[in-house]
Length: 268
Image (cartoon, rainbow, N blue to C red):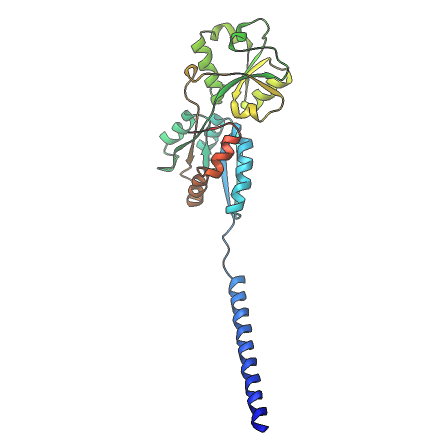
């Protein structure tokens, strides 16, 4: 009987030691997990063409799912204005332009990091008016029914430059010059063309699809203007070049391609 009691006592002690050991192991594992280093927070400054506003909002949401530590601060505007800001030293990690000339100008000044300049998406130029417009196409530009045509400032807004090329191709530039009203970016052109401040306007297809107030009257054929591609490049002065490269790669994933296509962009 005494032997049985001793044996039972030994078994109980062994079980107690094992349980304490497991508990310590669990606590140690939990402690290691709690003390595991987390990725530091990073803010990327993006200068992007105004027409990308809606798509970038969705992209930021998707980025947070895979890179919760990365925050995007996006400066939207006319590509030419953004180019000038970067040249003047404005903080910027990544530039996405609606035209090639702005990116080329920065590249020629050695402001773009080598091997990071790529074509991201392409777009279409469209002629728009308010939802209830009765106008039917480019032939209306010279009509007495049209008093004002909204376009982006050609020197700083790529959409305005493409529209100017259309006028030259059609041979109507002089005939309609008095009707043209110039906006600071395509979002302003969109607002003027749908509010009655102008009967017609030239914006990108992506802008038109983002508005419930406008009607696409005509999609301008590509033979009337130079190709509309949006290049992206990382600024050489970026304080976060590796994270910037990672974000640039993210923009070329299927996730982002689907977002761009949703907003009317084509893949470059």
